Image (cartoon, rainbow, N blue to C red; front, side, top):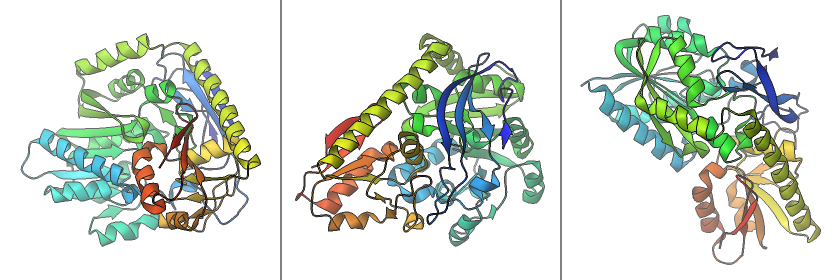
Length: 403
């Protein structure tokens, strides 16, 4: 475990702790009841560029070598990947495009590029996902992204993508330096990750877990890009994962897109350059915790069955910080069935078990970023016999009828 003392975007040392979620196990460490080591889950703010980051870095091999998150599990995310591929290919404007996807997971993103006629390559450290990409006939190097991987690949790329990986990286300077070497001079680098503005504005505290080392604003990312001799040619905000931001970058020192300036101005106007905003965010999380704990306790006193849907990393942050116990959790990913959640040790089951329940259920939607898709699945499984309710805890605690 490494403690962070300087901002990884600008290098400043004036870091201020503003959120402490206690000691927690690694959010994707699903086991069969093992006692897991816990680590501090704290967030600091750089008072120079206003980048948010965890106070510690955990050894990556503990989190990513055997990875149970599978990109292609939800239709929502598959649709998102398809949209990204079409947009990216249209921007490159070449007949034959060579694409590299960093942290390609099960190859879902590369499948869409392949359908568009691109030559595709992937890099990912998860050894357990290699079998999936082999079946899809997608060449993947099982390793972490670095300069040495470029030698193994033996080629440069017109397009490099990294979705939901950049926030996982400690040495983001080395990550970008390797991208620069692997990218053709006229190539495009696309990086997408959850937007720090959404996290603060909508109380998305469960975006915080040990894999996510950074929570970027446009201001902090633009500062970093300039340091590493990249310029932002465009950016797009997307609703995926509770609100993400997608940057399109090219090599060389140049002015960033006017969109960058406009969003930085908006960030400042929204109070994101003011520490009081972050302290208020921390206070909101405590209030949400108290409300949800009271709601669940009241249901239990009335002998109601409270379960969860979505054995997600974000859900585990919530469960461990709120200290909740549920009857069980269902998840669409078969790799998680029969395991238990890290910390609270709640059993994970197939959603089909919902068909066996003979009373009204109160279901905490822990993968709330796929809320509509999950509610539709519950309706399909449960029919019209019962009056089930969905519980949300972001941005505030709400109880919604599913029937």
